[in-house]
Amino acid sequence: MDLPQNRLKQWFRNPPQRRPLGSWLMAASPVTAEAMGFAGFDFLVLDMEHVPVDVPQAAALMRAIAGTPAETMVRLPWNDPITVKRVMDAGATTLMFPYIQNAQEARAAVASTRYPGRGTRGVAAMHRASRYGTVDDYLNRADDEIAVVLQIETPEALERLPEIAAVEGVDALFLGPGDLSAAMGHKGAIGHADVQTALREGVARAGREGMPCGIVGATPELVKGYIDAGFAFVAIASDLALMMGAARNALAEIGAGHEGKSGTGR
Image (cartoon, rainbow, N blue to C red; front, side, top):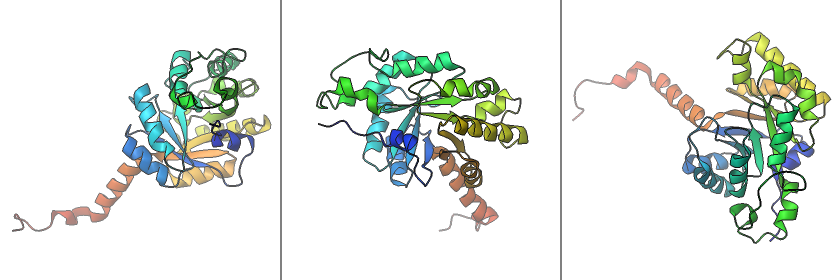
């Protein structure tokens, strides 16, 4: 069996004319993940940092998305080689590492995704990533289809962006507006002018380094603005946020009229 190609890695290397659009998976539900995969998103971020998802659950979510047109990006809980090894053996090929602060941490992240000779990933022959041993010469070819995305989430990391981007094996960066706004003293105020300026300076700096850069926005208006600012791939909200937004909008549209007539209706 041939090694499946990583379309996200291809997009990072050769950006398509239309920006890839994604969303976050916060519900930890294979049903929701599969539905989102059929909704039309190019990629879905399986969040293990802020969602109580363990490795077996992550594998179930990846299986659900695999049957849809969407690609999977797994955001790890931390820059931890043990977790990286287990998630990769479970089938993850595009990994997002949170809170990368410098080139040393970036090199450690990349190394944890590569087999000995290029990194420190532990070797096993039988797992979902190798299609249970059926992928031809998996151990010598796996590295070629692994994509590493590093999150830049503080002003200090933004200052070190060029050195982080220069680390061999980094495929893309991802600016984290939530943590960045908090680190700048504006918790919960992503729309603050200083935060938005920092985000635009960050994507411009990434562009000068020739590094594709992604971001997430809560609304279509924010996402359109990020695309105009030069972000190479953008996620909009999450499964739960989209669901809650639709639910609250429906209730607001019905308004006070939902009380209807008094009585049981019989």
